[in-house]
Length: 163
Image (cartoon, rainbow, N blue to C red; front, side, top):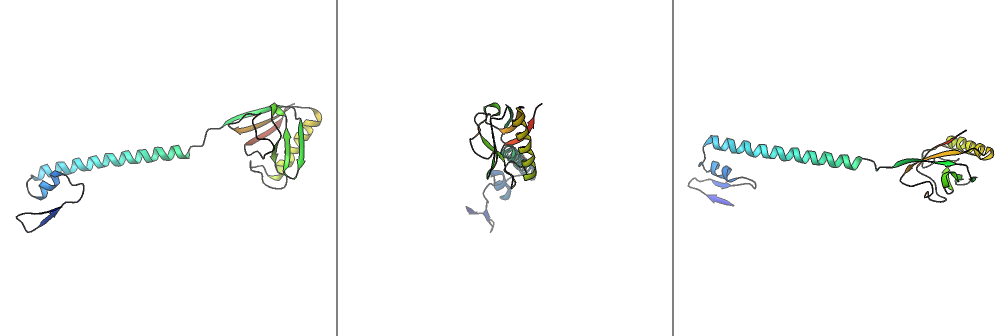
């Protein structure tokens, strides 16, 4: 909205200008009043910027936080141990159904290399033949009994044998 004044200048006010700014441009406000109002406006905008930055940082923190997963151990004797095209299959400890622990020919989804998988199979085979209990550690929100049957485990963390 433009208004003509006595002066030959058209005063066009950008959006966001306060009444104080308009009056200052029209010469109705003393200089100190204008400076005070301008500082007040800048301080208000500065607080808003700080608020926006805080909200953005908090949002980024919440987005980058990993989902909470619990770590638990399935302990007991092995009731099933197999080696096939999909890798090493194991079942039994802690009521765990048969799952694929790792692959012997490629990198597994849980990070096991073929060499680590072969060593894991050898340890599980020795424990099965001797009847010793094993402990298999997972990091997810499931339990030993609710592991998906006949699927590759992506949350298997550690396998160890207890004497």
